[in-house]
Image 1 (spheres, rainbow, N blue to C red):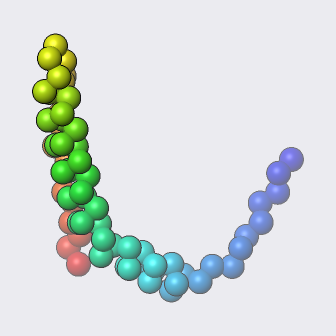
Image 2 (spheres, rainbow, N blue to C red):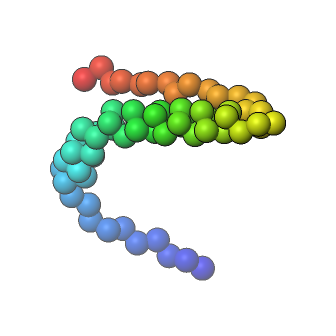
Length: 64
């Protein structure tokens, strides 16, 4: 049997860490989109290769 232990958390530190990381989300999303497009272009250029689907990313922004 496994016992669960609770670890004290500094909730303010967690909020602060997520806030710092959030500043990079848009840049990382753009990089992923550009990488995906490049991969799609490379795969499409291979003779006889068929790319079945490419679904665009959905951008979600918070109201704050």
